[in-house]
Image (cartoon, rainbow, N blue to C red; front, side, top):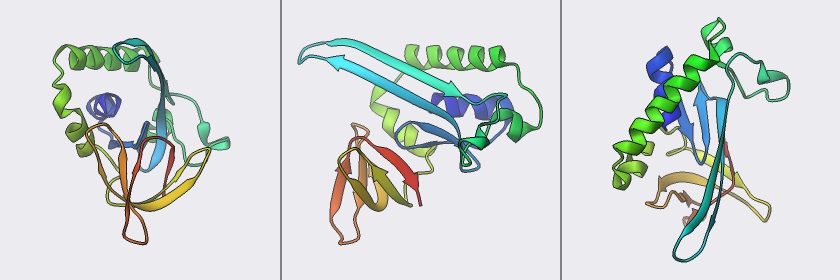
Length: 159
């Protein structure tokens, strides 16, 4: 969400988030975020976060549903400026965070809710209407049979 807000502020583009970890512009992926955490019952050992942003590259050869800032804006963008702005916004967010409001703020910038999605994991495929995200970030799907399923991870595809 912070990256989406940064791109909106810097370039006046409609950057949105897709559950759980992508940023889209005009429905195309411009950024992906990967995270890993190791924790015990009483403490977090580490959190590792990797962020990839398509700035001046052309990802469409391998990812037809992807885009870059250069493609969206029609010009090359200084990568250092994007990185600096993002890191400044990220630091501000950490220093001034209301962690109780993170999910509700994320919902204001999402393209995932209220649409049919397919979630793929190594064990199963789930399809349904994305109706909500709970306080822990799990996606709530309404399945075709009317039942509700909580999804805590997976690759999300907008249908």
